[in-house]
Image 1 (cartoon, rainbow, N blue to C red):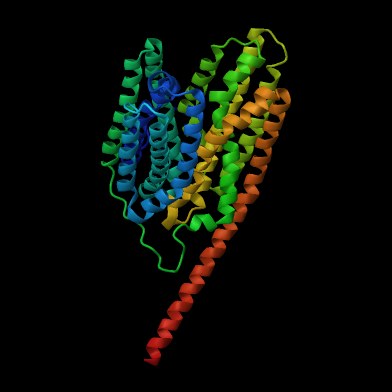
Image 2 (cartoon, rainbow, N blue to C red):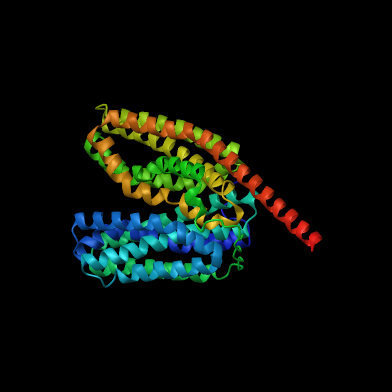
Length: 425
């Protein structure tokens, strides 16, 4: 079956265009940001790490209220404003030259990025029918990877020049890319805000939804795979194996191209909560196998053999990533009430900044410091999280059905009381 590159016409294709526009800028930003902050802004690596940790921690907290704002005010307008805020935050990096201003700008950037992710999900939910959402999200993920790859190539040109002007050009391009994203989002139809139910329901109901919180926590554990390829693997390859250092770039390209080519096809098997839970479980098993293979690369093998083992491990890792992504998308939408998609997606999305904040520290300690036992423990953590997904999803499903039944009963009694009062009158 041929691979369909473009998403279906209409709203999905416009969403993909918006995703592509800012992911190109982000790809260049990710490649160049560390050196830019050191060589142009004048910060130390410790200051950069502290600032970004604080920023993503703040961003993870802001995702829920910004998602709730999208529910109440409409996701398209909220997404446009957050894209503009992200553009302004990136543009401010062009002029700041102190840690305090860097910290403020980084917090604005992280808050806007986390909020934008939540409002985009709410926007997609308002424009795409439930059966089609996972497939559209797979297309958007492929588009994201294509944009990141192109942006990383452009960022590589800036790195080869290694001048302040080249780095400034990258940040200017990223700021413009979010302006373009905002303009593209304006081409989408307006999604009406969801009116309040007026039943005394708390504004941030997701914070009281314990089953959904457990599902979100499990997903955050599974997302520890995110800093695995970008941070832990480079250190592992250089310090623990005889593989050539250029393999780091090759593994990144392998991951990007595989997601671009096969994410849509992988997502087709996910059609409901049962298949989604099964996909996450299978992904955890494959991830466990990947960790075992990565551990073998430290067995003192020749460089070519270690490289071959690392390629096998990275292939298993990207297969697991695609399955876990498809399953988690379906779970996050299917368990969210229709009138609170924004805040629920904002809460579920906190797994990404949590993984970005805690992942580097945890993975460095596990893999670089502990070595092979660390890989075995990490694989067991993935396996345990995958096994816990199914029961947690079923608990959340029962809880949601119970709440819906209680609400219907309450509305029925209210209608009966009103009818009785009318008769008495």
